[in-house]
Image (cartoon, rainbow, N blue to C red):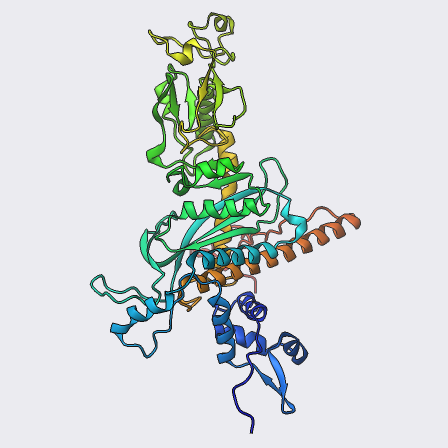
Length: 509
């Protein structure tokens, strides 16, 4: 009689492919769903993937135990904080078992392997022809609830998912309220078009998946720097005020050193004048003339739902404020410093301290009351601006100008990515979508969802290109978005009333 169990014939690529198939079919990222997808494949495909083997003259498919064992073995090499199975373990012994499982694990090496796997999975799902189409990236984070429930504050035992923690979910939609959740922060870096470039498929280039104990902007900066080392050089990085409000040493400064140009929204507490540098007013990451009007320096971003007239007035005030801006006249040196010039010397405004500027016509604004004791920015033609001057708010465009608004509007691509992930007809990510415990299993499932998103996007873009080429070859117009014509009720002409004052029924028949 044969002895021993069935051979562990499943490999890691087969497990990843099964989970991706399940996500693509709109199913949750459960191991049982992945095994069902493998069981639905043809017999020859199952044999080629190692799902079915021939033994004693018959075909034997892999069992759920084999599938879960292959998944667990795959994660054991990349999980920096594995979560043991607490089934059958007493409550008092769970903390000791968790400590015993994690002893002897090289956390840094496992973390590096996990990040390489996540980056390789997402990058491999983007066709080569699209990788160089744009360098601009839109970054954002959202909440990802785990299947586990947290423990009470006075309970010393770990939760079923001890790597998860409490986080804050902020909702900007009308009527939505902020709330606390127990899980992880999931971040995406979505490809967007260049400022003056054509539209590109909004692929997910990188993801970051961490516990709320980790600062999300710092984790995203590390992810983009790792992509920079791999040859993916970021161009414009579009971020909201959740990123710009953080310490510049963890997000803004590292990305600037990597050559990225930041386009950010500023937090309400960070807007407006914040100190001076050699007499020049530092406001919103830009240096202005000491005599710049205070009302212009306190100009905020355009309100949501603003009318055309409000937009025109806002842009005019922003353009007038730019007349007082010290212009950049040099590139960044090795120390990160650059030089700026007085706006009157550049011919943007009239100032009595610069007699040559008074020859400008009166369409230029005039400094009525210059400083009695002119500072360095008024006595020198140029001044040096070190790298630490307003490193938190300095960005590509002047905030809140019209150019900044149009450039920052590209950031909605990251919101569309999260909408796709959470749409029940697509990714369907919600609580219970993944019932695995631990950061590494959930991060791997999230990366596979990004892979499915990129593959679907590439196929849809190729189909659209083929249809556009076909219509051009047959002389048809360009492919546009089809809109349904609104159907209203048929117009009924008024009819005369009968002698009793009742109108006849207009319905025919």
